[in-house]
Length: 93
Image 1 (cartoon, rainbow, N blue to C red):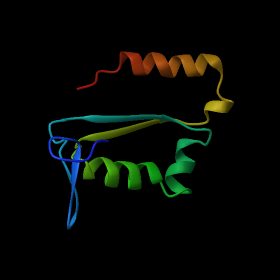
Image 2: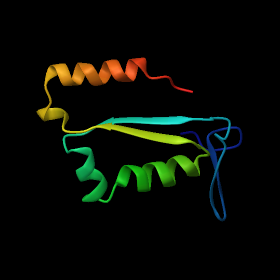
Image 3: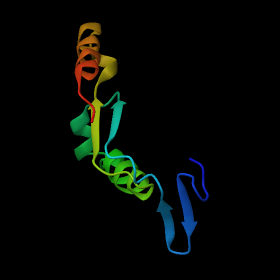
């Protein structure tokens, strides 16, 4: 991300001021070797707590949605293709 006037953010004395407020919806699509429930409940849900609630919101994003395809290494090719088809059919605002 580029820092500065008319860029993604500026650094002020009180922290980062995000300039990406024109983005109305943000979608975070991830894959993981661990199941999604394990990431959320036992690993502290760092994607949501740090990346989404801190980093993206600090840059000015709002209406953030996170989708994870967990256990990707143990999934079959058919299951991975089904997930990709689901993402391809999904309507993004």
